[in-house]
Amino acid sequence: MNPPSKSAITELASTGKLRAALNMSNFLLTAKDAAGAPIGVAADLGRELAHRLSVAIELVPYASPGLIADDAGKNKWDVAFIGAEAQRANAIDFTPAYVEIEATYLVPPGSNLQTPAQVDAKGLRIAVPERSAYELWLTRNIKNAELVRFKGADATFAAFRDQKMDALAGLRPGLITSQANYPGSRIINGNFTAVQQAAGTPKNRPNGFAYLLEFIAEIKASGLVAATIKKNNVVGLTVAA
Image 1 (cartoon, rainbow, N blue to C red):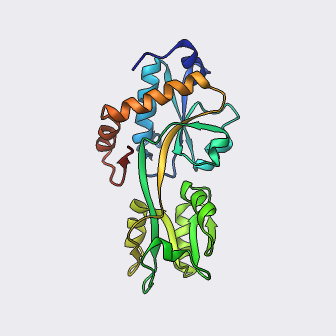
Image 2 (cartoon, rainbow, N blue to C red):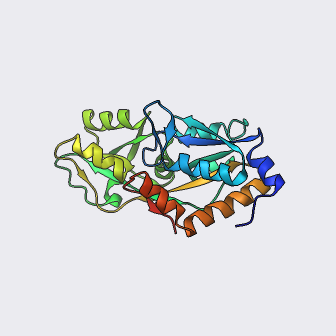
């Protein structure tokens, strides 16, 4: 790919360094080392982008993607690695996805629900972490069931189990862990959506965004995204088409 223009570097590293926002609630893309510093696929891709811009990297961890979106117009980050959702696109310019993560349901012991479509029925309650990418999708698309939102994955799982809800919405890899902690529960076959994980910049950075588009396309085509997934030993991520 072409080297970045001066204007692209200025827009993507407005403080002289690339501030990469990371969603620490997505355990497939982010983690922490023994000292508590961010690591993982998203951190590695942020470092690669900074290297190509010839600037230093500052990893900016956030507890949730919603908080990243809230800060999009506050000059607190330059590039974010989060789920691309229409609601967030009001403040963020998103690239095409670099990875996809299947989202589906966990149902309790004895449930007769077999498909994602059956979960959207009157009288059923779906537990979901608030402001997750798939919660935004469910908010737009669920017509009959009741969405019950909680803060964080752990609280959502506990409420689903303890309040005997009908389904727990989540990313399939995370639901595998939840299933192991709830004997008799079952993950439904199929998915209700595939969360598109993308890179984004705050609005009004056209040259920086144009370079980011090229960067994401190149690292997918070259195999760098796949290699980074393998390096971090992540199961459940698929390189987006």
